[in-house]
Length: 220
Image 1 (tube, rainbow, N blue to C red):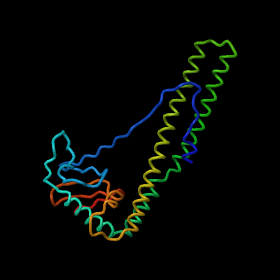
Image 2: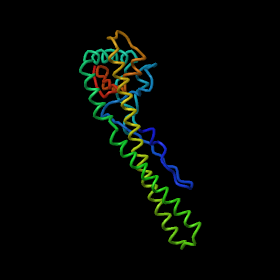
Image 3: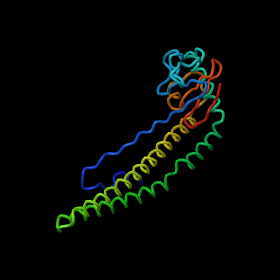
Image 4: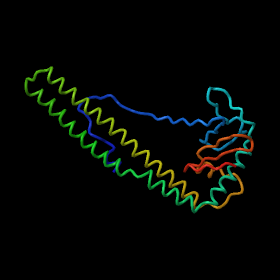
């Protein structure tokens, strides 16, 4: 359904392109987080992010091996609770990734856009055939265009929400598939790091918290 609604009707004129970008910032008070775009490949101390206020974190020196060891221990704890984790993740998928209502709203907005486009076309055609008062025509035309842009903004927002839910569902399903087929680990696995870990927060040399992609947090 989401794909069917991805191309709404457009006005018979050039329009301003609208786009949005979301930036989610998460701050940990008195702690530092490591970026998780790729597995650690250098001493951990060089991967500490800058803390609030632009000042370097005061977190003690943490090496790559310490992060890898924390990862291995956290993964094995996660795997020891595999059955409960599976139930919880499936529940999250059912509760937070259902987009049925959003897709229904998406369809309604698409239909409304088509109606407004039809009204605009009729307005333009009528003005071409009949000598209308141009002030009234302009007011009517601009009103319809404003209505279109307002509905289009709602449509785009709902469409993005549908896509976000689909992406989240896919991520959780892939996470669960990896966990369910994984045996306990004895050494660092780059594939698992990329598949399971969201980010790591370092509190001290002996206080490292691993946050997994399903939201599970394990401190080791």
